[in-house]
Amino acid sequence: MKIIVGLGNPGAKYAGTRHNVGFMVLDCLAARLDAAFSREKYQGLIATVVTQGEKLLLVKPLTFMNNSGDCVARAARNRVSSPDDLLVVADDVHLPVGKLRLRSSGSSGGHNGLRSVIERVGTDAFPRLRLGIGEDATRADLTQHVLGRFTKEERPAIEQMVEDGTDAVSCFLASGIGKAMNDFN
View 1: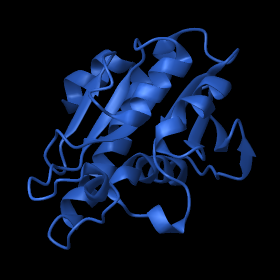
View 2: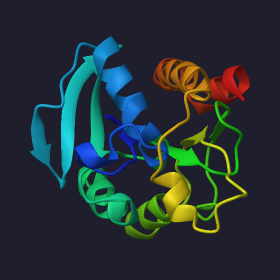
View 3: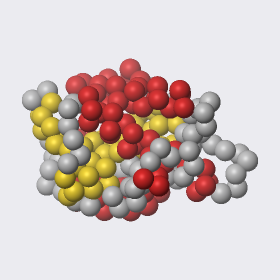
View 4: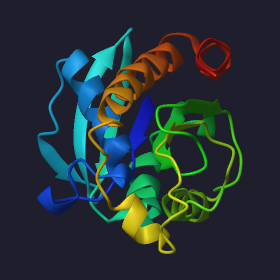
């Protein structure tokens, strides 16, 4: 079984914010796979589908960003045989708007959601897809930036990034992290 996790914050208040691009990619992937987030389990919204002969669990944590690891650890426990079977999709303020970066492992890079996942799962040796939401040098408070909405000018790049991110996840599922990194980084 593989698990794909999109990080974000639950609720209408946060829909469409910079911090929720992980949810956006999961929603796009679910639509492509004709899957629905129809259950709550492990403190998250869950969609299960079989693709390419393998069971796939899509997870959107409902624990809010800073506690995402609680949901991810519960979902992964006894379901993945290797950290390589877990892919976490998250925003990244250090990447320009619209840019993707896949990694097979690594630090949290200062991202509280990834930090929580690393702490609760007990390793940083899992693949992750980072989605560029850009920095805002004019804002002293990073929280306001990540919880803010994209500008009208940024929206086309974000829509394309969500599509490209979904393609990258599909490539990961079909061919593994190495091929996905070669094709999308």
